Length: 214
Length: 332
Ligand SMILES: Cc1cc2nc3c(=O)[nH]c(=O)nc-3n(C[C@H](O)[C@H](O)[C@H](O)COP(=O)(O)OP(=O)(O)OC[C@H]3O[C@@H](n4cnc5c(N)ncnc54)[C@H](O)[C@@H]3O)c2cc1C
Ligand code: SF4
Ligand code: FES
Ligand code: FES
Image 1: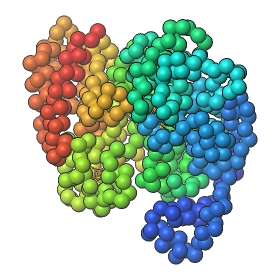
Image 2 (image 1 turned 30 degrees about the vertical axis):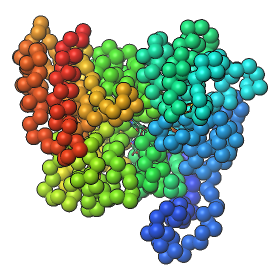
Image 3 (image 1 turned 180 degrees about the horizontal axis):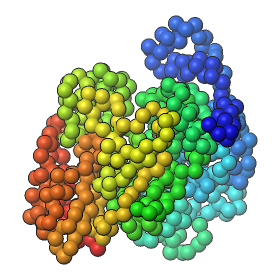
Image 4 (image 1 turned 60 degrees about the horizontal axis):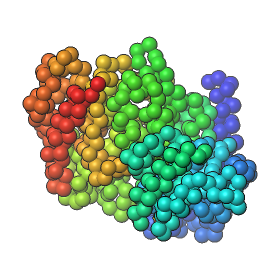
Protein backbone atom coordinates (compact mmCIF):
# COMPACT_ATOMS: atom_id res chain seq x y z
CA UNK A 1 0.00 0.00 0.00
CA UNK A 2 1.35 3.41 -0.90
CA UNK A 3 1.41 6.41 1.39
CA UNK A 4 -1.31 8.03 -0.57
CA UNK A 5 -3.57 5.10 0.08
CA UNK A 6 -2.91 5.27 3.79
CA UNK A 7 -3.83 8.90 3.80
CA UNK A 8 -6.87 8.05 1.82
CA UNK A 9 -8.03 5.58 4.41
CA UNK A 10 -7.42 8.04 7.20
CA UNK A 11 -9.23 10.75 5.34
CA UNK A 12 -12.01 8.34 4.80
CA UNK A 13 -12.28 7.50 8.45
CA UNK A 14 -12.17 11.09 9.60
CA UNK A 15 -14.88 12.05 7.15
CA UNK A 16 -17.15 9.31 8.30
CA UNK A 17 -19.71 9.18 11.00
CA UNK A 18 -19.30 7.26 14.23
CA UNK A 19 -19.79 3.57 13.95
CA UNK A 20 -21.33 2.65 17.27
CA UNK A 21 -23.90 5.34 17.10
CA UNK A 22 -24.83 4.21 13.66
CA UNK A 23 -25.53 0.65 14.67
CA UNK A 24 -28.03 1.90 17.23
CA UNK A 25 -29.67 4.42 15.00
CA UNK A 26 -29.89 1.97 12.13
CA UNK A 27 -31.87 -0.33 14.35
CA UNK A 28 -34.08 2.57 15.34
CA UNK A 29 -34.44 3.66 11.75
CA UNK A 30 -36.01 0.29 11.11
CA UNK A 31 -38.07 0.56 14.31
CA UNK A 32 -40.87 2.49 12.70
CA UNK A 33 -41.13 0.16 9.77
CA UNK A 34 -41.40 -3.48 10.64
CA UNK A 35 -42.67 -5.32 13.67
CA UNK A 36 -39.77 -7.87 13.68
CA UNK A 37 -37.15 -5.15 13.82
CA UNK A 38 -39.18 -3.32 16.45
CA UNK A 39 -38.92 -6.47 18.49
CA UNK A 40 -35.18 -6.50 17.91
CA UNK A 41 -34.87 -2.89 19.07
CA UNK A 42 -36.71 -3.75 22.27
CA UNK A 43 -34.51 -6.81 22.72
CA UNK A 44 -31.35 -4.79 22.49
CA UNK A 45 -32.67 -2.33 25.03
CA UNK A 46 -32.63 0.72 22.77
CA UNK A 47 -34.79 3.58 23.84
CA UNK A 48 -37.00 5.43 21.42
CA UNK A 49 -35.63 8.83 22.25
CA UNK A 50 -32.28 8.02 20.64
CA UNK A 51 -34.12 8.19 17.36
CA UNK A 52 -34.48 11.92 17.75
CA UNK A 53 -30.72 12.36 17.88
CA UNK A 54 -29.59 12.63 14.31
CA UNK A 55 -26.20 12.17 12.93
CA UNK A 56 -25.12 15.28 11.10
CA UNK A 57 -22.45 15.78 8.48
CA UNK A 58 -21.13 19.03 7.01
CA UNK A 59 -22.20 20.01 3.51
CA UNK A 60 -21.27 23.04 1.44
CA UNK A 61 -23.35 23.65 -1.63
CA UNK A 62 -24.29 26.71 -3.64
CA UNK A 63 -28.02 26.99 -4.05
CA UNK A 64 -29.43 29.64 -6.36
CA UNK A 65 -26.21 31.62 -6.06
CA UNK A 66 -25.96 31.49 -2.28
CA UNK A 67 -23.31 29.34 -0.62
CA UNK A 68 -24.95 27.21 2.05
CA UNK A 69 -22.90 25.75 4.90
CA UNK A 70 -25.10 23.06 6.30
CA UNK A 71 -25.16 20.13 8.65
CA UNK A 72 -27.34 17.33 7.45
CA UNK A 73 -28.11 13.69 7.98
CA UNK A 74 -26.47 11.61 5.20
CA UNK A 75 -29.80 10.09 4.17
CA UNK A 76 -31.43 13.44 3.36
CA UNK A 77 -32.18 13.82 -0.33
CA UNK A 78 -31.58 17.07 -2.17
CA UNK A 79 -35.35 17.37 -2.53
CA UNK A 80 -35.97 17.15 1.20
CA UNK A 81 -33.08 19.48 1.92
CA UNK A 82 -34.57 22.10 -0.38
CA UNK A 83 -38.12 21.77 0.81
CA UNK A 84 -37.83 20.91 4.48
CA UNK A 85 -34.67 22.68 5.57
CA UNK A 86 -34.20 25.58 3.17
CA UNK A 87 -37.86 26.36 2.67
CA UNK A 88 -37.48 26.28 -1.11
CA UNK A 89 -40.83 24.64 -1.73
CA UNK A 90 -40.99 25.50 -5.42
CA UNK A 91 -39.43 22.13 -6.21
CA UNK A 92 -42.21 19.58 -5.87
CA UNK A 93 -42.37 16.05 -4.53
CA UNK A 94 -44.54 13.85 -6.70
CA UNK A 95 -43.52 10.21 -6.56
CA UNK A 96 -40.25 10.55 -4.59
CA UNK A 97 -38.99 7.61 -6.69
CA UNK A 98 -37.66 9.08 -9.94
CA UNK A 99 -40.83 8.35 -11.85
CA UNK A 100 -42.47 11.74 -12.41
CA UNK A 101 -39.94 14.59 -12.76
CA UNK A 102 -41.75 17.01 -10.42
CA UNK A 103 -38.51 17.39 -8.46
CA UNK A 104 -36.34 18.36 -11.45
CA UNK A 105 -33.56 20.83 -10.59
CA UNK A 106 -30.22 21.66 -12.18
CA UNK A 107 -27.01 20.46 -10.55
CA UNK A 108 -23.94 22.00 -12.18
CA UNK A 109 -26.13 22.83 -15.16
CA UNK A 110 -27.53 19.32 -15.62
CA UNK A 111 -31.17 18.51 -14.99
CA UNK A 112 -31.57 15.76 -12.40
CA UNK A 113 -34.24 14.25 -10.14
CA UNK A 114 -33.68 15.80 -6.70
CA UNK A 115 -35.61 12.96 -5.04
CA UNK A 116 -32.97 10.37 -5.97
CA UNK A 117 -30.02 12.68 -5.29
CA UNK A 118 -28.49 12.33 -1.86
CA UNK A 119 -27.78 15.90 -0.76
CA UNK A 120 -24.30 14.84 0.40
CA UNK A 121 -23.36 14.08 -3.21
CA UNK A 122 -23.86 17.75 -4.13
CA UNK A 123 -20.86 18.88 -2.05
CA UNK A 124 -19.20 21.74 -3.92
CA UNK A 125 -21.91 21.83 -6.62
CA UNK A 126 -24.12 24.62 -7.89
CA UNK A 127 -27.82 23.86 -7.61
CA UNK A 128 -30.52 25.87 -9.40
CA UNK A 129 -34.17 25.51 -8.51
CA UNK A 130 -37.24 27.18 -9.97
CA UNK A 131 -36.76 29.99 -7.41
CA UNK A 132 -33.34 30.73 -8.88
CA UNK A 133 -34.19 30.39 -12.56
CA UNK A 134 -35.05 34.00 -13.42
CA UNK A 135 -31.78 35.92 -13.86
CA UNK A 136 -32.83 38.76 -11.52
CA UNK A 137 -34.14 36.43 -8.82
CA UNK A 138 -37.68 35.71 -7.64
CA UNK A 139 -38.61 39.40 -7.41
CA UNK A 140 -37.40 40.36 -10.89
CA UNK A 141 -38.99 39.64 -14.26
CA UNK A 142 -39.89 36.02 -15.06
CA UNK A 143 -37.61 33.76 -17.05
CA UNK A 144 -38.70 33.51 -20.74
CA UNK A 145 -39.77 29.90 -20.19
CA UNK A 146 -41.97 30.91 -17.25
CA UNK A 147 -43.53 33.61 -19.46
CA UNK A 148 -44.11 31.10 -22.22
CA UNK A 149 -45.84 28.63 -19.88
CA UNK A 150 -48.24 31.40 -18.85
CA UNK A 151 -48.80 32.54 -22.43
CA UNK A 152 -49.52 29.01 -23.68
CA UNK A 153 -51.44 27.76 -20.65
CA UNK A 154 -48.78 25.14 -20.05
CA UNK A 155 -50.41 23.94 -16.85
CA UNK A 156 -53.68 23.36 -15.05
CA UNK A 157 -53.13 22.47 -11.40
CA UNK A 158 -49.51 23.60 -11.64
CA UNK A 159 -48.02 20.86 -9.50
CA UNK A 160 -45.72 19.47 -12.19
CA UNK A 161 -44.91 22.93 -13.55
CA UNK A 162 -41.68 23.83 -11.72
CA UNK A 163 -40.23 20.50 -12.81
CA UNK A 164 -41.54 20.95 -16.35
CA UNK A 165 -39.99 24.41 -16.58
CA UNK A 166 -36.60 23.33 -15.23
CA UNK A 167 -36.64 20.42 -17.65
CA UNK A 168 -37.79 22.60 -20.56
CA UNK A 169 -34.94 25.04 -20.05
CA UNK A 170 -32.45 22.16 -19.97
CA UNK A 171 -34.08 20.65 -23.04
CA UNK A 172 -33.32 23.80 -25.05
CA UNK A 173 -29.84 24.23 -23.58
CA UNK A 174 -29.00 20.62 -24.48
CA UNK A 175 -30.10 21.20 -28.06
CA UNK A 176 -33.00 18.76 -27.91
CA UNK A 177 -35.85 21.12 -28.78
CA UNK A 178 -35.67 21.30 -32.56
CA UNK A 179 -39.15 19.98 -33.29
CA UNK A 180 -42.24 18.83 -31.38
CA UNK A 181 -41.33 15.14 -31.62
CA UNK A 182 -37.90 15.72 -30.20
CA UNK A 183 -39.36 17.87 -27.43
CA UNK A 184 -41.89 15.17 -26.54
CA UNK A 185 -39.12 12.57 -26.31
CA UNK A 186 -36.79 14.78 -24.28
CA UNK A 187 -39.57 16.00 -21.97
CA UNK A 188 -40.75 12.44 -21.30
CA UNK A 189 -39.17 12.50 -17.84
CA UNK A 190 -41.83 14.97 -16.69
CA UNK A 191 -45.29 13.56 -16.17
CA UNK A 192 -48.34 15.86 -16.09
CA UNK A 193 -51.48 14.33 -14.63
CA UNK A 194 -53.54 17.24 -15.94
CA UNK A 195 -52.38 16.46 -19.44
CA UNK A 196 -51.09 19.91 -20.35
CA UNK A 197 -48.58 18.28 -22.66
CA UNK A 198 -49.54 19.90 -25.97
CA UNK A 199 -49.42 23.39 -24.46
CA UNK A 200 -46.10 22.62 -22.82
CA UNK A 201 -44.66 21.61 -26.20
CA UNK A 202 -46.06 24.87 -27.67
CA UNK A 203 -44.42 26.90 -24.92
CA UNK A 204 -41.05 25.28 -25.50
CA UNK A 205 -41.29 25.66 -29.29
CA UNK A 206 -42.16 29.31 -28.80
CA UNK A 207 -39.11 30.01 -26.63
CA UNK A 208 -36.89 28.02 -28.94
CA UNK A 209 -38.16 29.87 -32.05
CA UNK A 210 -38.00 33.22 -30.31
CA UNK A 211 -34.30 32.59 -29.81
CA UNK A 212 -34.29 34.25 -26.37
CA UNK A 213 -31.42 33.38 -24.12
CA UNK A 214 -32.46 30.62 -21.75
CA UNK B 1 -34.80 4.71 4.67
CA UNK B 2 -32.50 3.29 7.32
CA UNK B 3 -29.69 5.43 8.64
CA UNK B 4 -26.27 4.72 7.26
CA UNK B 5 -22.72 5.86 7.38
CA UNK B 6 -21.61 7.94 4.40
CA UNK B 7 -18.03 8.19 3.20
CA UNK B 8 -16.45 9.77 0.17
CA UNK B 9 -13.42 8.20 -1.46
CA UNK B 10 -11.01 9.57 -4.02
CA UNK B 11 -9.08 6.49 -5.12
CA UNK B 12 -10.40 3.16 -6.44
CA UNK B 13 -8.21 1.38 -3.92
CA UNK B 14 -9.85 3.16 -0.99
CA UNK B 15 -13.27 2.42 -2.49
CA UNK B 16 -12.52 -1.28 -2.80
CA UNK B 17 -11.06 -1.42 0.71
CA UNK B 18 -14.06 0.35 2.22
CA UNK B 19 -16.59 -2.04 0.70
CA UNK B 20 -14.52 -5.21 1.06
CA UNK B 21 -14.03 -4.88 4.78
CA UNK B 22 -17.62 -4.12 5.76
CA UNK B 23 -20.40 -6.65 5.51
CA UNK B 24 -23.20 -4.37 4.59
CA UNK B 25 -21.63 -1.56 2.64
CA UNK B 26 -22.20 -0.57 -0.98
CA UNK B 27 -20.81 1.76 -3.60
CA UNK B 28 -22.95 4.78 -4.40
CA UNK B 29 -22.77 6.08 -7.97
CA UNK B 30 -25.70 8.01 -9.50
CA UNK B 31 -28.00 6.63 -6.82
CA UNK B 32 -30.95 6.30 -9.19
CA UNK B 33 -31.42 2.65 -8.37
CA UNK B 34 -29.84 2.32 -4.95
CA UNK B 35 -31.61 5.29 -3.31
CA UNK B 36 -34.91 4.11 -4.78
CA UNK B 37 -34.39 0.64 -3.30
CA UNK B 38 -33.30 2.07 0.04
CA UNK B 39 -36.41 4.26 0.24
CA UNK B 40 -38.50 1.14 -0.10
CA UNK B 41 -36.36 -0.83 2.37
CA UNK B 42 -35.50 -3.40 -0.27
CA UNK B 43 -31.85 -2.66 0.37
CA UNK B 44 -30.58 -1.28 3.68
CA UNK B 45 -26.82 -0.84 3.59
CA UNK B 46 -25.18 0.38 6.79
CA UNK B 47 -22.56 2.24 4.83
CA UNK B 48 -22.52 4.01 1.48
CA UNK B 49 -19.17 4.58 -0.17
CA UNK B 50 -19.64 7.52 -2.55
CA UNK B 51 -17.47 6.82 -5.61
CA UNK B 52 -18.55 9.87 -7.62
CA UNK B 53 -15.24 11.65 -7.07
CA UNK B 54 -13.19 8.81 -8.57
CA UNK B 55 -11.53 9.69 -11.88
CA UNK B 56 -13.42 7.02 -13.81
CA UNK B 57 -15.62 9.04 -16.14
CA UNK B 58 -13.49 9.25 -19.25
CA UNK B 59 -14.41 7.89 -22.66
CA UNK B 60 -11.35 7.30 -24.80
CA UNK B 61 -10.04 5.55 -27.86
CA UNK B 62 -7.76 2.57 -27.22
CA UNK B 63 -5.56 0.55 -29.57
CA UNK B 64 -8.39 -1.91 -30.12
CA UNK B 65 -11.54 0.10 -29.60
CA UNK B 66 -13.09 2.29 -26.97
CA UNK B 67 -12.80 2.40 -23.19
CA UNK B 68 -15.69 3.83 -21.21
CA UNK B 69 -15.13 4.66 -17.55
CA UNK B 70 -17.55 3.13 -15.06
CA UNK B 71 -18.61 6.55 -13.81
CA UNK B 72 -19.33 8.03 -17.24
CA UNK B 73 -22.92 9.23 -17.15
CA UNK B 74 -25.40 7.54 -19.46
CA UNK B 75 -26.01 10.87 -21.25
CA UNK B 76 -22.31 11.49 -21.75
CA UNK B 77 -21.83 8.05 -23.30
CA UNK B 78 -24.93 8.26 -25.51
CA UNK B 79 -23.91 11.65 -26.87
CA UNK B 80 -20.20 11.05 -27.23
CA UNK B 81 -19.05 11.54 -30.80
CA UNK B 82 -17.04 8.32 -30.99
CA UNK B 83 -19.89 6.30 -29.54
CA UNK B 84 -22.43 7.77 -31.96
CA UNK B 85 -20.15 7.24 -34.92
CA UNK B 86 -18.63 3.83 -34.20
CA UNK B 87 -21.02 2.23 -31.70
CA UNK B 88 -24.43 3.68 -32.60
CA UNK B 89 -26.21 0.66 -31.10
CA UNK B 90 -24.96 1.74 -27.67
CA UNK B 91 -26.17 5.33 -28.17
CA UNK B 92 -29.58 4.13 -29.28
CA UNK B 93 -29.94 1.71 -26.38
CA UNK B 94 -28.93 4.33 -23.82
CA UNK B 95 -31.27 6.93 -25.23
CA UNK B 96 -34.12 4.41 -25.07
CA UNK B 97 -33.65 4.07 -21.31
CA UNK B 98 -35.19 6.01 -18.43
CA UNK B 99 -35.52 9.82 -18.83
CA UNK B 100 -33.07 12.63 -19.67
CA UNK B 101 -32.84 13.53 -15.96
CA UNK B 102 -32.10 9.95 -14.92
CA UNK B 103 -29.58 9.49 -17.75
CA UNK B 104 -27.77 12.60 -16.49
CA UNK B 105 -27.37 10.87 -13.12
CA UNK B 106 -27.00 7.20 -14.04
CA UNK B 107 -23.52 5.78 -14.59
CA UNK B 108 -22.31 2.88 -16.72
CA UNK B 109 -21.35 0.78 -13.68
CA UNK B 110 -24.61 1.53 -11.87
CA UNK B 111 -26.61 0.70 -14.97
CA UNK B 112 -24.98 -2.74 -15.16
CA UNK B 113 -25.63 -3.32 -11.45
CA UNK B 114 -29.26 -2.15 -11.36
CA UNK B 115 -31.65 -4.65 -9.83
CA UNK B 116 -34.73 -6.13 -11.42
CA UNK B 117 -37.99 -4.15 -11.52
CA UNK B 118 -40.08 -7.20 -10.52
CA UNK B 119 -42.91 -5.82 -8.37
CA UNK B 120 -42.53 -8.56 -5.75
CA UNK B 121 -38.84 -7.82 -5.38
CA UNK B 122 -39.82 -4.23 -4.54
CA UNK B 123 -42.62 -5.19 -2.14
CA UNK B 124 -41.09 -6.29 1.16
CA UNK B 125 -44.41 -7.74 2.29
CA UNK B 126 -44.30 -10.34 -0.51
CA UNK B 127 -42.23 -13.48 -0.99
CA UNK B 128 -39.25 -13.14 -3.31
CA UNK B 129 -36.33 -15.52 -3.70
CA UNK B 130 -34.11 -12.76 -5.01
CA UNK B 131 -34.67 -10.42 -2.07
CA UNK B 132 -35.04 -13.14 0.55
CA UNK B 133 -33.68 -16.50 -0.60
CA UNK B 134 -36.04 -19.36 0.15
CA UNK B 135 -39.14 -17.21 0.67
CA UNK B 136 -40.67 -18.22 -2.66
CA UNK B 137 -41.45 -16.37 -5.86
CA UNK B 138 -44.48 -14.12 -5.94
CA UNK B 139 -44.32 -13.74 -9.68
CA UNK B 140 -44.86 -17.40 -10.52
CA UNK B 141 -48.62 -17.66 -10.68
CA UNK B 142 -48.84 -13.93 -9.86
CA UNK B 143 -48.39 -10.73 -11.83
CA UNK B 144 -45.68 -11.68 -14.28
CA UNK B 145 -46.42 -9.64 -17.35
CA UNK B 146 -42.91 -8.12 -17.34
CA UNK B 147 -41.12 -11.39 -16.66
CA UNK B 148 -38.68 -13.75 -18.35
CA UNK B 149 -39.26 -16.30 -21.09
CA UNK B 150 -35.67 -17.53 -21.41
CA UNK B 151 -33.21 -19.14 -19.00
CA UNK B 152 -35.57 -19.60 -16.06
CA UNK B 153 -34.66 -23.24 -15.37
CA UNK B 154 -33.64 -24.20 -11.85
CA UNK B 155 -33.13 -27.61 -10.33
CA UNK B 156 -34.94 -26.60 -7.19
CA UNK B 157 -38.39 -25.08 -7.57
CA UNK B 158 -38.24 -23.38 -4.20
CA UNK B 159 -35.40 -21.13 -5.33
CA UNK B 160 -36.85 -20.19 -8.70
CA UNK B 161 -36.85 -16.66 -10.09
CA UNK B 162 -38.33 -15.46 -13.38
CA UNK B 163 -37.25 -11.82 -13.14
CA UNK B 164 -35.59 -9.94 -16.00
CA UNK B 165 -32.59 -7.64 -16.02
CA UNK B 166 -34.07 -4.26 -16.89
CA UNK B 167 -31.14 -2.53 -18.60
CA UNK B 168 -31.21 -1.27 -22.18
CA UNK B 169 -27.54 -0.31 -22.23
CA UNK B 170 -26.49 -3.85 -21.35
CA UNK B 171 -28.25 -5.25 -24.43
CA UNK B 172 -25.98 -3.18 -26.66
CA UNK B 173 -22.88 -3.99 -24.60
CA UNK B 174 -23.46 -7.74 -24.64
CA UNK B 175 -24.16 -7.70 -28.38
CA UNK B 176 -21.01 -5.68 -29.10
CA UNK B 177 -18.68 -8.10 -27.25
CA UNK B 178 -17.75 -5.70 -24.46
CA UNK B 179 -15.38 -6.65 -21.65
CA UNK B 180 -15.71 -5.41 -18.09
CA UNK B 181 -12.64 -4.29 -16.21
CA UNK B 182 -13.03 -4.72 -12.45
CA UNK B 183 -10.75 -4.05 -9.52
CA UNK B 184 -10.80 -5.92 -6.23
CA UNK B 185 -8.66 -6.40 -3.16
CA UNK B 186 -6.67 -9.03 -5.06
CA UNK B 187 -6.09 -6.85 -8.11
CA UNK B 188 -7.77 -6.32 -11.45
CA UNK B 189 -9.53 -8.80 -13.68
CA UNK B 190 -11.44 -8.72 -16.94
CA UNK B 191 -14.87 -10.28 -17.35
CA UNK B 192 -16.42 -10.84 -20.80
CA UNK B 193 -19.70 -8.92 -20.71
CA UNK B 194 -21.63 -12.06 -21.60
CA UNK B 195 -20.38 -13.66 -18.34
CA UNK B 196 -20.93 -10.61 -16.17
CA UNK B 197 -24.64 -11.20 -15.52
CA UNK B 198 -25.88 -14.65 -14.65
CA UNK B 199 -28.97 -16.79 -14.96
CA UNK B 200 -30.88 -17.28 -11.71
CA UNK B 201 -30.32 -21.04 -11.43
CA UNK B 202 -30.60 -21.90 -7.76
CA UNK B 203 -29.17 -18.60 -6.52
CA UNK B 204 -31.37 -15.79 -7.84
CA UNK B 205 -30.08 -13.46 -5.12
CA UNK B 206 -26.95 -13.16 -7.24
CA UNK B 207 -27.52 -10.96 -10.29
CA UNK B 208 -23.96 -11.14 -11.55
CA UNK B 209 -20.49 -12.56 -11.05
CA UNK B 210 -18.94 -9.53 -9.37
CA UNK B 211 -17.35 -10.43 -6.04
CA UNK B 212 -17.99 -8.52 -2.82
CA UNK B 213 -15.96 -5.31 -2.85
CA UNK B 214 -15.05 -5.48 -6.53
CA UNK B 215 -15.38 -2.15 -8.28
CA UNK B 216 -16.28 -1.84 -11.94
CA UNK B 217 -13.58 0.40 -13.42
CA UNK B 218 -14.41 0.50 -17.12
CA UNK B 219 -16.02 -1.23 -20.06
CA UNK B 220 -13.95 -1.99 -23.17
CA UNK B 221 -15.56 -2.16 -26.59
CA UNK B 222 -13.65 -3.70 -29.50
CA UNK B 223 -13.80 -1.95 -32.88
CA UNK B 224 -16.44 -3.47 -35.13
CA UNK B 225 -17.78 -3.32 -38.68
CA UNK B 226 -21.42 -2.84 -37.63
CA UNK B 227 -21.81 0.94 -37.43
CA UNK B 228 -23.75 1.28 -40.70
CA UNK B 229 -26.31 -1.37 -39.85
CA UNK B 230 -27.28 -1.15 -36.21
CA UNK B 231 -30.66 -0.79 -34.64
CA UNK B 232 -32.06 -0.89 -31.12
CA UNK B 233 -35.78 -1.52 -31.01
CA UNK B 234 -37.58 -1.24 -27.69
CA UNK B 235 -41.24 -2.18 -27.26
CA UNK B 236 -42.90 -0.75 -24.17
CA UNK B 237 -46.21 0.31 -22.70
CA UNK B 238 -45.72 3.96 -23.65
CA UNK B 239 -43.56 5.72 -26.22
CA UNK B 240 -40.87 6.76 -23.75
CA UNK B 241 -39.79 6.52 -20.07
CA UNK B 242 -40.87 2.93 -19.55
CA UNK B 243 -38.99 -0.33 -19.17
CA UNK B 244 -38.87 -2.74 -22.08
CA UNK B 245 -41.46 -5.43 -22.54
CA UNK B 246 -39.11 -6.73 -25.20
CA UNK B 247 -36.14 -5.05 -26.82
CA UNK B 248 -33.69 -6.13 -29.50
CA UNK B 249 -30.22 -4.87 -30.30
CA UNK B 250 -29.26 -5.84 -33.84
CA UNK B 251 -26.01 -5.14 -35.67
CA UNK B 252 -25.16 -6.42 -39.13
CA UNK B 253 -22.14 -6.37 -41.37
CA UNK B 254 -23.47 -6.56 -44.94
CA UNK B 255 -21.64 -7.11 -48.18
CA UNK B 256 -24.18 -6.25 -50.85
CA UNK B 257 -27.22 -7.99 -49.45
CA UNK B 258 -25.31 -10.82 -47.83
CA UNK B 259 -24.85 -10.97 -44.08
CA UNK B 260 -21.16 -11.35 -43.30
CA UNK B 261 -21.63 -11.22 -39.60
CA UNK B 262 -24.38 -10.40 -37.11
CA UNK B 263 -24.61 -9.41 -33.46
CA UNK B 264 -27.90 -9.84 -31.67
CA UNK B 265 -29.22 -9.56 -28.13
CA UNK B 266 -32.63 -9.31 -26.52
CA UNK B 267 -33.82 -7.41 -23.47
CA UNK B 268 -36.85 -7.87 -21.23
CA UNK B 269 -36.74 -11.63 -21.71
CA UNK B 270 -34.20 -13.01 -19.27
CA UNK B 271 -32.38 -12.66 -15.95
CA UNK B 272 -29.36 -11.59 -17.98
CA UNK B 273 -28.94 -9.57 -21.17
CA UNK B 274 -29.83 -12.32 -23.65
CA UNK B 275 -27.24 -12.74 -26.37
CA UNK B 276 -28.44 -14.73 -29.41
CA UNK B 277 -25.21 -16.41 -30.52
CA UNK B 278 -26.94 -19.29 -32.29
CA UNK B 279 -29.01 -16.89 -34.35
CA UNK B 280 -25.88 -14.93 -35.27
CA UNK B 281 -24.35 -18.14 -36.61
CA UNK B 282 -27.51 -18.96 -38.51
CA UNK B 283 -27.49 -15.54 -40.19
CA UNK B 284 -23.91 -15.74 -41.40
CA UNK B 285 -23.75 -15.93 -45.20
CA UNK B 286 -27.53 -15.60 -45.63
CA UNK B 287 -29.27 -12.89 -47.68
CA UNK B 288 -30.67 -10.03 -45.60
CA UNK B 289 -34.30 -10.70 -46.45
CA UNK B 290 -37.47 -10.90 -44.43
CA UNK B 291 -37.60 -14.65 -45.10
CA UNK B 292 -34.16 -15.07 -43.53
CA UNK B 293 -35.15 -12.93 -40.54
CA UNK B 294 -38.29 -15.00 -39.96
CA UNK B 295 -36.23 -18.17 -39.89
CA UNK B 296 -33.80 -16.45 -37.55
CA UNK B 297 -36.67 -15.62 -35.22
CA UNK B 298 -37.62 -19.30 -35.07
CA UNK B 299 -34.08 -20.16 -34.05
CA UNK B 300 -34.15 -17.40 -31.44
CA UNK B 301 -37.34 -18.62 -29.82
CA UNK B 302 -36.21 -22.18 -29.20
CA UNK B 303 -36.66 -23.02 -25.54
CA UNK B 304 -38.82 -19.98 -24.76
CA UNK B 305 -41.41 -20.50 -22.04
CA UNK B 306 -44.23 -18.22 -20.90
CA UNK B 307 -45.58 -17.97 -17.36
CA UNK B 308 -49.13 -16.84 -18.07
CA UNK B 309 -49.37 -13.08 -18.17
CA UNK B 310 -46.16 -12.84 -20.15
CA UNK B 311 -47.18 -15.36 -22.81
CA UNK B 312 -47.61 -12.46 -25.23
CA UNK B 313 -43.82 -12.12 -25.27
CA UNK B 314 -43.66 -15.43 -27.11
CA UNK B 315 -45.16 -13.56 -30.07
CA UNK B 316 -43.77 -10.11 -29.38
CA UNK B 317 -40.16 -11.25 -29.09
CA UNK B 318 -39.86 -12.85 -32.56
CA UNK B 319 -41.76 -9.96 -34.13
CA UNK B 320 -39.47 -7.43 -32.48
CA UNK B 321 -36.44 -9.38 -33.65
CA UNK B 322 -37.65 -9.46 -37.26
CA UNK B 323 -38.45 -5.74 -37.19
CA UNK B 324 -35.11 -4.80 -35.66
CA UNK B 325 -33.23 -6.86 -38.25
CA UNK B 326 -35.22 -5.31 -41.09
CA UNK B 327 -34.42 -1.80 -39.89
CA UNK B 328 -30.75 -2.64 -39.25
CA UNK B 329 -30.42 -4.05 -42.76
CA UNK B 330 -31.82 -0.79 -44.17
CA UNK B 331 -29.79 1.65 -42.06
CA UNK B 332 -26.73 3.19 -43.57
C1 LIG C 1 -38.18 5.75 -13.10
C2 LIG C 1 -37.01 5.00 -13.65
C3 LIG C 1 -37.04 4.53 -14.95
C4 LIG C 1 -35.96 3.85 -15.48
N1 LIG C 1 -36.04 3.37 -16.76
C5 LIG C 1 -35.00 2.66 -17.27
C6 LIG C 1 -35.05 2.13 -18.59
O1 LIG C 1 -36.02 2.32 -19.31
N2 LIG C 1 -33.98 1.42 -19.04
C7 LIG C 1 -32.88 1.22 -18.26
O2 LIG C 1 -31.95 0.58 -18.74
N3 LIG C 1 -32.81 1.68 -17.01
C8 LIG C 1 -33.84 2.40 -16.51
N4 LIG C 1 -33.77 2.87 -15.22
C9 LIG C 1 -32.67 2.44 -14.37
C10 LIG C 1 -31.45 3.29 -14.45
O3 LIG C 1 -30.83 3.10 -15.70
C11 LIG C 1 -30.53 2.83 -13.32
O4 LIG C 1 -31.13 3.19 -12.12
C12 LIG C 1 -29.16 3.46 -13.42
O5 LIG C 1 -28.52 3.08 -14.60
C13 LIG C 1 -28.31 3.07 -12.22
O6 LIG C 1 -27.09 3.78 -12.27
P1 LIG C 1 -26.60 4.64 -11.02
O7 LIG C 1 -25.27 5.17 -11.36
O8 LIG C 1 -27.63 5.62 -10.62
O9 LIG C 1 -26.46 3.47 -9.94
P2 LIG C 1 -26.62 3.50 -8.35
O10 LIG C 1 -28.05 3.57 -7.99
O11 LIG C 1 -25.69 4.46 -7.75
O12 LIG C 1 -26.06 2.04 -8.04
C14 LIG C 1 -26.75 0.87 -8.42
C15 LIG C 1 -25.95 -0.33 -7.88
O13 LIG C 1 -24.71 -0.43 -8.56
C16 LIG C 1 -23.63 -0.48 -7.66
N5 LIG C 1 -22.53 0.20 -8.34
C17 LIG C 1 -22.57 1.45 -8.88
N6 LIG C 1 -21.40 1.74 -9.48
C18 LIG C 1 -20.61 0.64 -9.33
C19 LIG C 1 -19.28 0.31 -9.74
N7 LIG C 1 -18.52 1.16 -10.45
N8 LIG C 1 -18.79 -0.89 -9.41
C20 LIG C 1 -19.52 -1.77 -8.70
N9 LIG C 1 -20.79 -1.51 -8.29
C21 LIG C 1 -21.32 -0.33 -8.61
C22 LIG C 1 -24.14 0.18 -6.41
O14 LIG C 1 -23.47 -0.29 -5.28
C23 LIG C 1 -25.60 -0.21 -6.41
O15 LIG C 1 -25.77 -1.45 -5.82
C24 LIG C 1 -34.82 3.61 -14.69
C25 LIG C 1 -34.77 4.10 -13.39
C26 LIG C 1 -35.85 4.79 -12.86
C27 LIG C 1 -35.77 5.29 -11.46
S1 SF4 D 1 -39.38 -13.26 -10.20
FE1 SF4 D 1 -37.49 -13.21 -8.99
S2 SF4 D 1 -37.48 -11.10 -8.26
FE2 SF4 D 1 -39.61 -11.53 -8.84
S3 SF4 D 1 -40.64 -12.39 -7.02
FE3 SF4 D 1 -39.84 -14.11 -8.17
S4 SF4 D 1 -37.87 -14.45 -7.16
FE4 SF4 D 1 -38.42 -12.35 -6.65
S1 FES E 1 -40.57 13.40 -7.09
FE1 FES E 1 -38.65 13.04 -8.03
S2 FES E 1 -39.23 12.10 -9.87
FE2 FES E 1 -41.13 12.19 -8.82
S1 FES F 1 -50.44 20.87 -14.48
FE1 FES F 1 -51.35 19.46 -13.11
S2 FES F 1 -49.91 17.86 -13.13
FE2 FES F 1 -49.23 19.10 -14.73
